[in-house]
Length: 219
Ligand SMILES: *Cc1c(COP(=O)(O)O)cnc(C)c1O
Image (cartoon, rainbow, N blue to C red; front, side, top):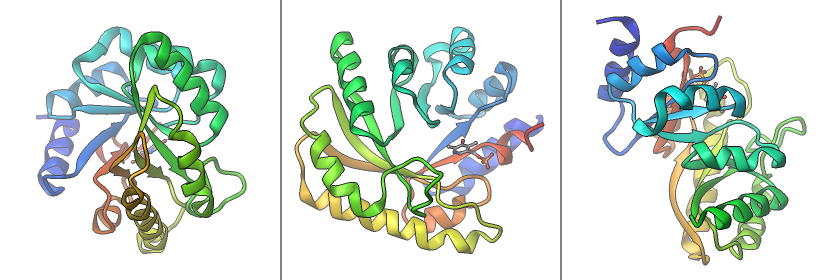
């Protein structure tokens, strides 16, 4: 058994049963991704539309596809031909565009709201204090359904340093879930990557997005 398969199996064994492991596959080849799928990965996360289109031709719907990159409005139509969920909704205009294309396709697309939990000006995502209002604005869009929150959190050297941001995102998740807003069914918290997924799970993540621990360092 090669490394990718071993890595996937080890991680799937390690995480609690309720936690979904997304393989973050930017920059990885179709062959590498197929090994991860063979070992039990059921959702792959891609950041770039063009890259995903190429891979989708070979991999197709054998797995679910989550969009985890920054999405430009003019790419929404293409994204909806591939992806089953968009984790990075962070503006009303983007949500409206997704809603429009989903309506054309006759589907209701699951989306997550990206939270800029570190309130970093250069990063995308909704500031924590704006999230409730933002989600209630989106709940008028009938062809999307809001199913969760996603956060990256600030870059840290010590995984402990990101705990605060994950906890903040989980608190936000609980608060919004309690409100029972129309079109909102809060189920997923997507946070934690290779260096931080353990802390994320401790703080309530039920989706982790893992790249390098599965595939090795990116070249
Ligand atoms: C690349 C990426 C990951 C995975 O990062 P690793 O550190 O390689 O595990 C997770 N989430 C997003 C949004 C990414 O772009």
